[in-house]
Length: 234
Image (cartoon, rainbow, N blue to C red; front, side, top):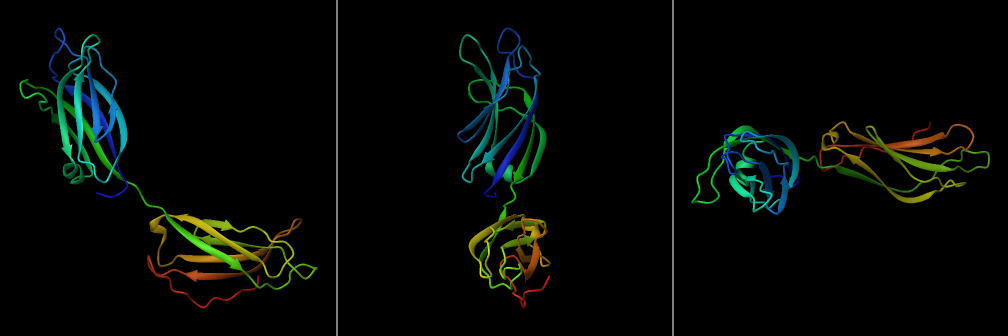
């Protein structure tokens, strides 16, 4: 099972539950994934309860089983166990979605059990984010302003993602020493993906002036193919 996996489940309803209190029961359901526990609301005086409650629980890598205990609430004494359903890690992992009525099994071997509950379960595998890091160190630039210098900053672009360095005032030889990070989805890392690094001259009054750019062509998931890089005039 994947490292980052959650289980969505819906406890829909129960039917034909046994009467525990004067011809009826007050059923609720407890769900356990190892040490994590959630519980539904109690449906009072009903042998065919409708809960319709939805939950999402994280499944740790080493979890062993998922259990549903149907209980009868008692305001005076201890709550009674009506029955349970247990699903192993292997049973959950063998199918990504389940929508079924399931028979309750006994908890106490000396007691009879009856009834079933309707469950919907679905595994949710989280998409891992990939971080593209670009170290923008320094540059040797042509003068742009009347003073013979520039106020440069760099911008890193990949698909629709972008990030910018700080602006360094009045210099042709900026030293940023910054690491820019872009959060990407795995499917964005395609053969056609291109990392673009642009350098601009910041202008307080008018438009920023384009100084040049360099492209990095991506090839494959791990390796990069570095093409000839050159500064291009704007």
